[in-house]
Image (cartoon, rainbow, N blue to C red; front, side):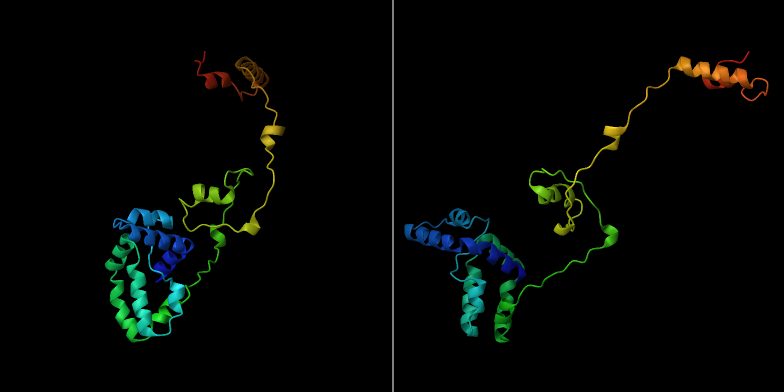
Length: 211
């Protein structure tokens, strides 16, 4: 029933257009109606029944409700009919009708799922202010393909400007030449030669043979 409710809600805005198209096609004697009805519905499926689930929920007589509900199911396009047949949905109707439960099932409100965030999984993203499509587009493109159950809290969004300290404040210093480094090492060797602490340091570094 959850799937039927979703299909019914999607088709409701174009319900009248589908009915009008159906009447026109019947009047013209056109039997291959599938493509035209899909176009009228604006979806890949449609329903040509005059009833909606909201209408059926108001039925008080169980016999009339069963007949109208079966007619409602018969009004779906062939692709939806195939799904109904695969799950043997129609086989449940007699039992529900006999138990006076069909109306209850149709009128039952869908469950509301409330998500509780896990602080350990919380993360942040830096999104350009002029991102095409905004946060929703970024989420669809960059996050949901890898974390399908991710969402964001609109109240947590902060708009600001990130200053790159490296770009604006870092002043790179030119590296010393090899000649300057060699001169420093030789000077160090001269100063420490008496203490025998750096004897042959330059040769060890550059791999030159000791004399």
